[in-house]
Length: 327
Image 1 (cartoon, one colour):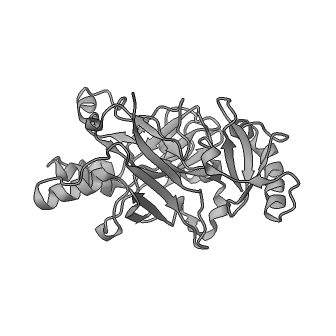
Image 2: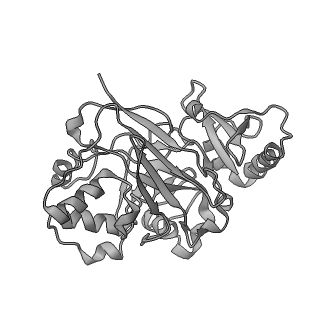
Image 3: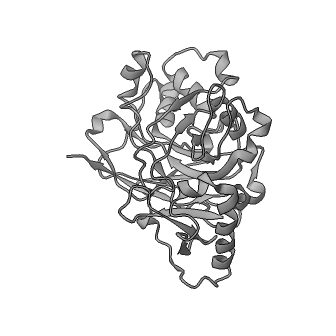
């Protein structure tokens, strides 16, 4: 099943069901006005949404309309929780090696996670506004899951049934603002602006055998200013799968329906697969030559992030954004 939120002037958008090939859509108001409402009562509402989904795919939905990603907000335009992990430890190791920092052994066994701003997400085609290119503007291609209610202390082995949806993520980072913030010892804030999400959230069954072991086994495609810079395999080198990330998130508290748990930047040990953020290629340059040559993003730059299934079709639709000066 594929779901999206149509911009309608409200804070949470209008829930729509989207066809498997992303060509058509249908309003789902009779079942749930918003995606959060559907998640709040998923066991009752999801089967109704799935019936509409099957009807839409069969070409029999009476009030279907052409699906336009540019008219979509993030699937959850705001959420009760956005917790982002760093499950591709290769990415962390490269960043630390580039600045000659020791890699703690615990990073391979204990997930890193921070709580990001969840009150104001960006839609898949929304411009991304920043005050200065001196902030070090960088994209980060990730995946995320959306959960139902997950009780505190839920074991890793019991977490997968709580995964109701998966989403594509561009977790914008402002690299030059992050070091002084972390130096204060209190975590990210200004360095992590509004996150963008792909137009469609999908149920795990939509991925077929590409979803197993709590991972998505498909390439993450990144095009910066129209040039492909990355096609890292999301299922490879993911040290902590989504089951482990959820279990980590609920160690000391509950996660309520609509909680979003991110994977962190998709990263492979094989450099020939490119990169999913600029910071990683700069780290590789520092390690190899002692100098980071690739600049961060400039005003007017574009980034397109997409994941294509084994059938050749886009899974989530694309994140397609432009960097714009905030005046």
